Image 1: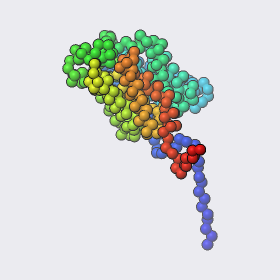
Image 2: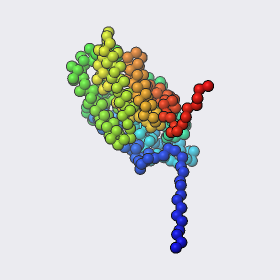
Image 3: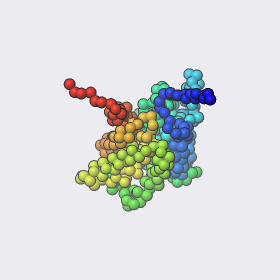
Image 4: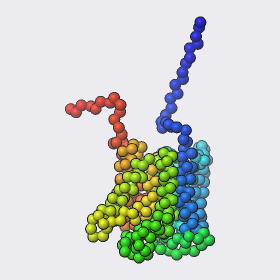
Length: 336
């Protein structure tokens, strides 16, 4: 009896190769969703200004990407959620009191310069949202450092200006910080829940931890970068953060203050701008933590998360190149 020969077709595709059914759009929109608790808390504390600033960032980011791609007759990819995420992250890095043109200009820079001019999603060297924030801080330093006192009232339109906890700690010390917030437990509680001055995304450390836990649960990120980042900050804060003696600093204040939680879970873990090798991610996180604390303790700014992540973005390719595992079966060349 004649048998029919069955042939198999081998399909070869270029990398990166997707291991499961998770799409870029699903991942991006899940990250957006993970930021929702922190955004809700920012609206609670800062009122309609938080919605206003964040919405301007998102709309400008999406429109900028769409117009750029249509102008060059490229495929429009705004439905994948990446432009939305860039706008959301930039908005959460801005003070709620900034005038309307700040988020518009910042989002345009983030998308057009930091993302699209490099080739679009997957080709950018630096985190686009942080590039936008850095540009705004350099261009309008005064407007970018005016912090509003939380009101905890959605209807409140006017807010008093005040310093952030990190600013008070840097300029006047922990004694002044405790004088304002009460004892340490009260201070920790305010920092954890978000009742303090800062950017829109600096509100509730607890809400950001909930979002970060979701990303870890979904395995969209791993522990390597956020834990090494936070661990390095905690260690250096404890060793060098005190006044007059080593090992007298308060790591909890530094962990719960500023944009650390937002940076560690949502920006330093960006797939494109961080190392892909696990050991390299630990080195990357340690570098972010060390630079953050160097700026916080010795630099001219009270916060250093943005600068730390952008600087370590530069080293991500070098880290990957030097920490990649040996090829299976490869033999090292003998030294002459």
